[in-house]
Structures are given as structure tokens and as C-alpha cells.
Image 1 (spheres, rainbow, N blue to C red):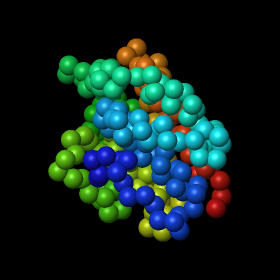
Image 2: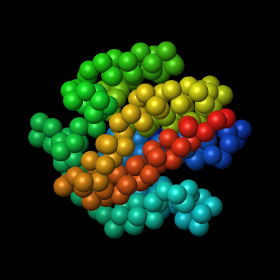
Image 3: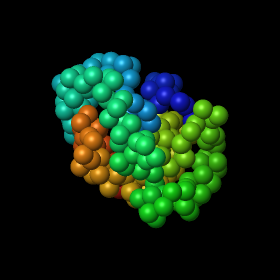
Image 4: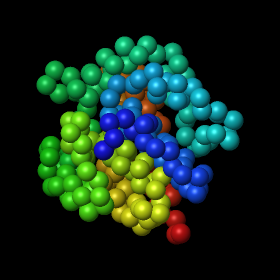
Amino acid sequence: MAEDALAVTPPPSAVSEEEQARAGVYALLGSVLAKPCSSEVRDFLDSIPLDGAGADVQLPWQKLQSEIASADLEELAHEYHALFVGLGRGELLPYGSVYLTGFLQEKPLADLRADLQRLGFEVTDSTHEPEDHAGALCEVMGIMAGSPDEFSHETQKAVFSKHLGSWMTEFFDDLIKAREGGFYRAVGEFGRAFIAIEKQYFAMEV
């Protein structure tokens, strides 16, 4: 998997605007959940117009932008560390296995690894987190959403339903309520809204 989700090659022009938008949101979430927020992420958020043409009006873009605009990147790094790393462990454990079974590296992770291998995804040497990390899963979905010829709607739906939709709303709820949250509360609200939109999207017949 790519180390920086925002570095994923943009989808080709043949991909619909909706699919490009979905891929972009997944890439953004993958970036802010996989590692501390960078200046590149800040610049990316600042560049998104909020006139309804450049951003999905159903998503709380404005709050996400205002939070990142007023934040210090060093403070965001401390916030990220307190939430997800900590001394021994962070306030939250952003892993599918934890939310689905209560324990790290349980059967959901094994099932995910089997599905990713079948779909052609490989873990790089620079990857330090299990594949069921929230950031890694968003990165995978971003790649799939941006490559609909390679990953069909039904394939995306199956991966989403089994490996993200089954627990990520609860994770974003916890992120919103986390005592160490600031910017990441806005990330939680944004992520929760996006997962709800994705559930509606996959519930529709195509």
C-alpha cells in the first residue's frame, strides 16, 4: 500500500466525477488517519472550493477546513500521538478487529488479508500497521473507487460492507467523543458523514 494516500495517482479522466470524488475523500481520510496531519494535507484542504461545485455539500467540509486552518501542525502531531499511539497505546485503537471482536489481530484481520491478496493488494516494507487500520482501509477503498474498471461496484460493495461499514461508524463516533480530540473531532464528524453516504451509495441498485 502507498505510504501516503494523497500520493495515489489520480484516477484517469474516464472515471466519473462521482468516482473521482469518492476516491479523493477516501484518500484524504486515509492520510489523516494513517499519520499526523502534514502541510500537504492542509494545502489540499485549503484548495477545495466550498461553493457546492468542488466539494460534496453533504459533507462537513467547512468545519474540517476551519479546524485545520487554525491548528498548529506540531500540536496536531501531539493530538494524533495521544489518540492513536500513546505510551503503550493511544486513547483509541483504530483497528477493525478491535471493533468487531474486542481484540487485536483476530479473524476479521485474517479475512481482510485473504480478500486483499485475492484482489491483488500487497503490503509494502514501509507498512507498520495491520491492514485493518482505519487509515489503511480508507486508502484501499480510495484506490478501488478510483479504478472502477479493475474493481467493480459489486467488489467495492463487498469490501466496504465486510471490512468498513461493519464498524467504522462506531470508530468515528468514538473519535468525535475522544477527550484528546480537536481537529480529529472534525475528522470524526466528516468520516461519519461520509460512511453514511457510502452506505446509501452501495444500497442503491446500479
